Image (cartoon, rainbow over all chains, first blue to last red; front, side, top):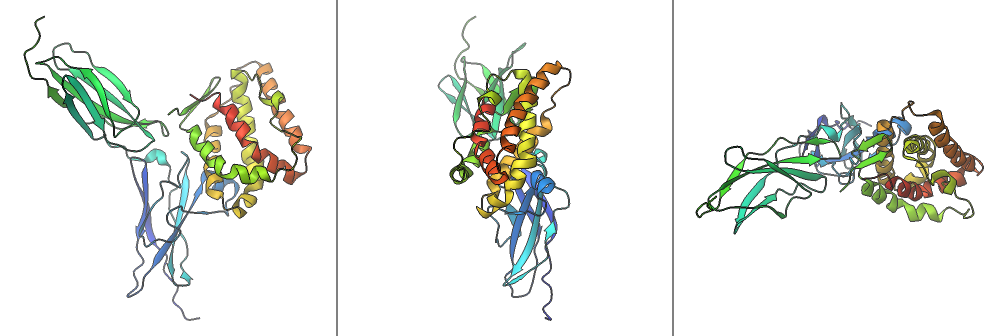
Length: 204
Length: 155
């Protein structure tokens, strides 16, 4: 029928950081045309048991692209296949399939952002809210010879958490790492931050 | 915010049980409404009650494999019609992950694995006694019984 075939999207890849999974691809560029895209996925179960079945992505069954947040589609720690096609009017391109299936256990985990504050003599930490899949291991210590490092698991980010009641004149330091049980991994520790409580050190 | 199953010696980390419940809840009412045989229960007391820790690894492995190979596979088109594939996908892929982590050891006494297998056969026999469509519908509808039982081993 003389209509040039709509080119399929190319260069599919997944950028996954802190359990947010973004499928990206090279856009199909046609002069003065508005191209849309459709994304579908298959978990390992589908590819093993019902390989002809692909499931439309929750957020990108028709998107302007060229990217799609597939975080809500990837709900198990198994390999997922992903595919994209272009849509122009009633025309659709062939499907392009992600070369390597994606498993969320490959996500990049960054050290968590954290704010340290003093509430009177209380040492308080607030960690970056990275979502429900994240817990945090916080290490804190008083900077002095032979100091002992304490550790505390913080179940959620985005809320202030009391760590320690400090003594005047002492320096207290803190660092934290993110833990993701769904994939059994943790991030590197953040940089250490220290605070000091004004006033004279108490006599021994 | 637990994330770990302990089926006796078998430990599985990385599956959030609340997510499995969420996935099943979206399908539960629709599927259970299609189960007309209210006098029969496949996952009945003799299958799931007083299961020892050692048995639980074997039994979970057998039950989840049956659900993957038989129930979900053959009920898939019905779920597709109901437009609930994302929920089934989430449930099935997490069951697949659990099965891949369960390594029922053969070191235990034969009686443990035999006892677990007898329980599974009770379930499978009851399944086979029903007409296939009715059996699939009932077994799928009983995932809540299965998840409730699995919850006993969740930390």
